[in-house]
Structure formats: C-alpha cells, structure tokens
Amino acid sequence: MSKPMTCEQAVRLFFSYIDRALAGEKLENLQHHLEACIDCCDRLQFSRQIETFVRDRVTDEPLPDGLEGRLRDRLRTRGSTRGES
Image (cartoon, rainbow, N blue to C red; front, top):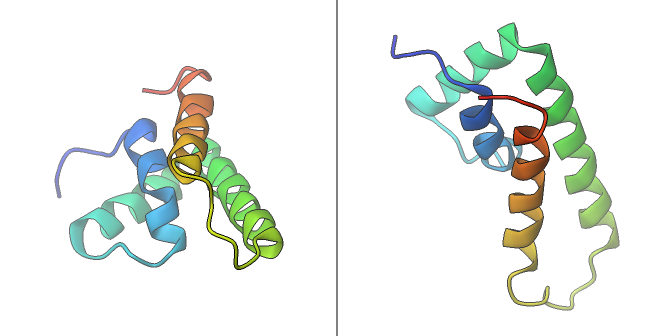
C-alpha cells in the first residue's frame, strides 16, 4: 500500500467520494483513512449534509460562475484551519 493519506488529501476527495466518482487506489486509500480518522468521518458527514442542503434547494437555474469552486475551497480551508496536515 502507498503512503497513508493525510486529512488534507482526504478532504479534497470528499465530494468525488460522495458523487461516487472515485475508484481504484484513491478510493481504497480514502476508505482506509476514514476507518482510522474520526475527524475526517465528521467532516465527511458535514460535507454530505452540505451536498443535501444545496441539492434540495437548487433549482434549474444555473449556479453563478465560480460558486461551486468557492464553496469547495471554503470547505477545504475550514478543515485546514483546524490544524490538519
């Protein structure tokens, strides 16, 4: 197995994981990390709640340019300010 995944690396993959867009080694490494890291499990649950909240409130209107990227960056920043590496 490759080097263990860091919390920062795990958080970057959450939305792909939620969307079932991960496979292979990345999926396996994330699953191993989640088995060992309660903080990331909590953040993953929060990410799922955000995803559900947004999905339930989104209409057929397109999102403003860059909104999705800003939200994802903000979520990553939220995790990194908690001292993860």
